[in-house]
Amino acid sequence: MNAPQSPPQNAPQHAPLTGHQSADGVLLVGGVKITQLAQRIGSTPFYAYSRDLLRARVAQLRASLPAGISLHYAMKANPMPALVQFMAGLVDGIDVASAGELQVALDAGVPVHEISFAGPGKRDIELCQAVAAGVLVNVESPRELPVLAALQDELGLPARVAVRVNPDFELKGSGMKMSGGPKQFGVDAEAVPDLLHTVGTLGLAFEGFHLYAGSQNLKAESICEAQLRSYELALRLAAHAPAPVSFLNLGGGFGVPYFPGEQPLALEPIGQNLAALQERAARELPRARLVIELGRYFVAEAGIYVARVTDRKVSRGQVFLVVDGGLHHHLAASGNFGQVVRKNYPVAIGSRMDAPAHVHEVASVVGPLCTPLDLLADRMSLARADVGDLVVVFQSGAYGASASPQGFLGHPGVAQALV
Image (cartoon, rainbow, N blue to C red; front, side, top):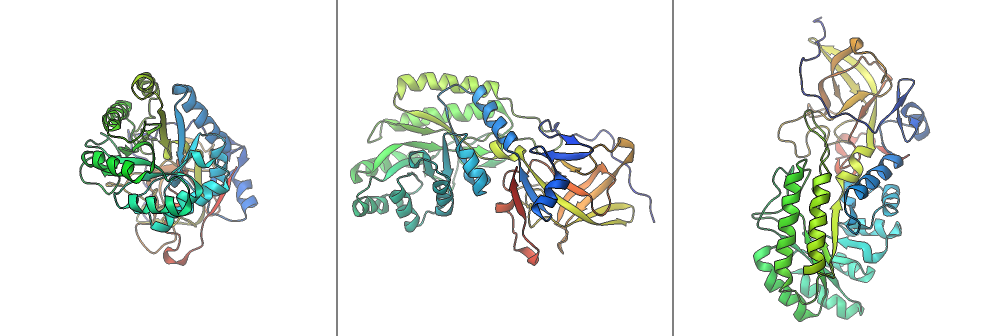
């Protein structure tokens, strides 16, 4: 048998994980040891989300941005009902992307005037549900307008609308670009004036604009540029609007550091930029409320994924820790959710957090699925683990359980807990 590999030298490191603590060598989430939490839940694997970290992230953002900027939570990042209800008490509004998410927001008690509904393929029944509920519809196609007008007449309720604009620019440095060029999202900026004319002709209740240039950006200067250009585009389009702009969603795009070498997003320049835009809006769009829509940034770092080691194998010198979870629960950590070149999320042996460096080893963490794609950590330096130990994947609060193929190969689903 070949000897296990040694840790790589001078490899880029993950950004420090300052929000998580441990006691007696065991990771804590919400002040609870994950070993105790596993017993409380009754099984592994599971996701755990910290109320304290969610609360701290919102407070940090409010302290960094000017007063009066509305913060909306984009539920698609994590639609767990208990988490949505908790977030509803911290932020100013919720953005949903389906009728199913709309129901979760309504059940959480979010005021209907603070819910917006986006998505490129809203079905007629979903538009009906939105108008009946009284929420704001982000129009993404001319097809939606006559449907909304008919619903407005049928239900005797105003069809509140904002136009989602596909700008003629994109968010530089974005992990996922959602504007610029041909896109399925929104209405091309050059086509918006004609669409606004139709909104007025049909008598829809126009409120404003929604612009979302991209996501997962760690460059403050890129986000500031996108916000400025989005504002100026909205200002130009406002001249064609059938009513004054009262709602201006400038999107989000705030990223979190997942991979080695990445650094946290600097908030100070973004706050300064928004303050300048707020001053302009007070003169140029005096009725407009500026909104920032964030999903991943609110919840990613507050969540962990925990799986238990079921086997330890050494194959030609490489250590494999086989765990009872994997790709089917955490598609993003496996690298199969948009990564071009697979990189490791921060991973640790959560039941051996105090293990000294000299007992660390290079190991790969793999799941139980019959595919080589089922990989949670590829040759990382980890504390030596054995059967029964708990592996933790950090930065797991966003796009986890709901964004993963839990039915793949018939393995059990994953539990979730808000702690």
